[in-house]
Amino acid sequence: MGTAILVIVVGVLVGGAMVTSPQRIWWLTESWKFKNPEANEPSDTAYGMTRAGGVFVILLALFVGWSIIHSEFERKNRREAEQQRKAAEAAFVVPRPENRGQLPVIGYFTRKAPKSLEITVYYLAPRESVRVAVRDSASHGPFKSSYPCYTSAAWGPATDAPRRVNPELFWAPEELGAVAKSERCHPGVGSKVHETSRYVDGPVPPPVVTDSAIVDRYGTEILPAAAGNVVPKLPEKMYPDP
Image 1 (cartoon, rainbow, N blue to C red):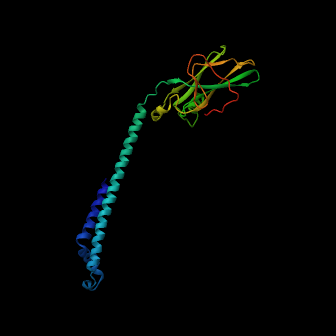
Image 2 (cartoon, helix red, strand yellow):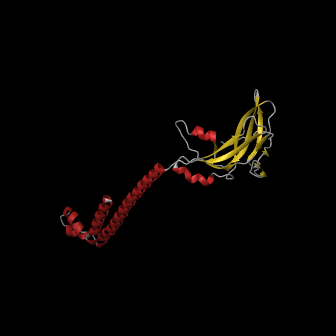
Image 3 (tube, rainbow, N blue to C red):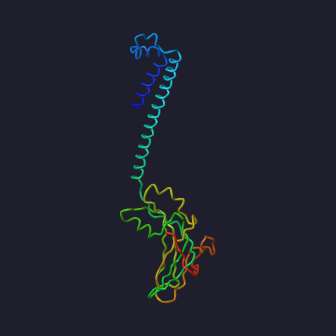
């Protein structure tokens, strides 16, 4: 602030002198260079140019001073905003994971393993979400990332036939900045394909059921959510999103 005031004061004083007393300035600063200063005194036009220059100096000083003051206020506001952000983050309490409901199932695909079968169930998830395995792996290591919106599939006991699977959506922000993404973490927001897999013994897979709705790849409902919905077997595997 002090620098801005100094620039304005000096600029106004110098510019004011140029506007009000150009002749006196010439006699104080230039006349000594000539043996006959009266004969070399500038014309009225030259003095007019000096006055115009004085107006420019005043305007320039005001502009520069205002710019300095504005910049200082902006820096102050940024510092205060950063302090408030850090205080809010320090006060943020990580909530318990919130179950936001079941996710619609597309179907399942089986793949032969040496002594078993792998059953992979595909379901639709919001575009903002990741699978719980991705979230867990991202929370470790040198480059940690936070994924507040994630999916997890609950499977019934391995001895059950049919096998029951219920994919669910969870919201669990670990930092204050993630809270703004909450509205993008609801069933039906986006059409990302996720998968969940289990191995079963024997060459014949058991039927797969779910309590979720059955949909196609694009989210069109085939069966509404109901206990024991039969999951359709797919003719080929799908390629899920992360």
